[in-house]
Length: 637
Image (cartoon, rainbow, N blue to C red; front, side, top):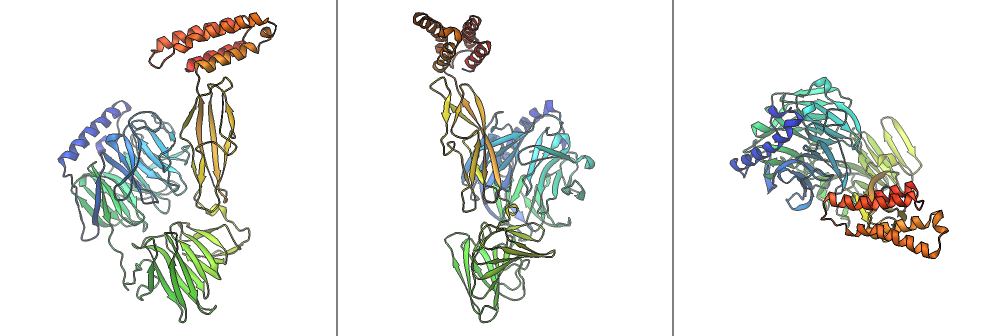
């Protein structure tokens, strides 16, 4: 937990202050009311479930509704179900990749990957949804891509990562793979940028704990808006309607502002709030007093006609419509012409519903589908001709036309889909949407710019979800039994490498080097694997294959190299045997190497072996390069 006066500190004192903060926060958690109940303004927010988290700090919500919470006192990050059930723990104290020294904030990207700021390590660590380390980026300093006290982190719809670099007074942007892009903030002279969030339009909202301000910044760096008057604003969360929720730390509350900057609500706590996040269902999750995560349900949206369709998305808020709810709890409304019979049948897919329309082919029915019960997105409208039916899968917003034709509309865009067509509907975020069409007949998109007929049967660029690729951790350690190294993998691929996708076909996986491959003794080889789906989207991950060295394999390699020399071939059988015995004697000390030895003891044994190899090279039984390689392999043991 960080106060405004700590916004800037030298690198020499920051580590000490980090430890002091942990002690102070622990005391605060004991002294403060541990229940940390919050009182809603009027009846706006309803307190819900809470669960304890030791050292709760940063928090974010994935698309699957699960929570990622920084557990500062344990130097780890936990993945929890909304009811508090622990699903996964990542990290632990340390400086190695995947370990943490004072983690602060967490952000979940559009593909489910997780980014965590590691304050003590001056870096950001990148994990997959299952906790596999993808990589780290950043180091201590003030240069491009370096950090001094990295805190807030956010990911935009394209996977770009934004990091609040507190003590350098700036915001830094990185690509999804961790490559430095640019620094943001010099024109605004941040005092101590702490929290950062990206709104639906791609704008950045940045808290400044030293200036007591919150700034809205366009993607191109233009300052759009400044909110002032905060005591110590820490973190920001933005809902689907564009409302901005800000943690006002020392005033122990969360304040809600309209997109124009007007205060519309505040949630008062009896305790200190560190971070907040919003689920797709509109629930607000808050880490309180570094001891627990609390849940709050938003107020019910206005529904003038009482048909279960919030006024904000109801096409006729004064006229009740026929409504339904699918198996996933999504609402739908129906407006049909007289004489039409409309039926809904839940499909085996938990987020699916089949809509059938019976009536004259000239009749039409309009259905609003996939609107969550709280009125938030995604939601889209389907217009069907009589005699048509569609299958809608709301969880991934997919649509399949079973017979006839259908028009799918959102905002200013309409997509016409005919029988046999399956499409993945995605929101462009600008009032329009797209259908990634990958089966059946061509589709037609009608927009304000005109009509475009798509006859290639596919719009790969509209599918923004790449395949999920799994690799066997960061390093695979192999122990060969012979001097020739070891063959790893089969024609089917490397063990532990697999890919999945939300499409029907399994993604194609290619690796370099290809499997199977023979890895040399003592080598460290980077294997790069790429999963590509049928839309052309790809995910690339790497892992290292390390082939260890044992006394037996090293001695075997030494003999093979000696026997391959020109001088050896001219020896008699007796002299060959004598030379082999000499090599075996030179290797014998290696058998005494143990993990419990001191570095001095190990060095003495390796040096003894190395002198023997130099002697063999001087006599012409080995080349200089071969002797150097053998000594290097011995040093690895």
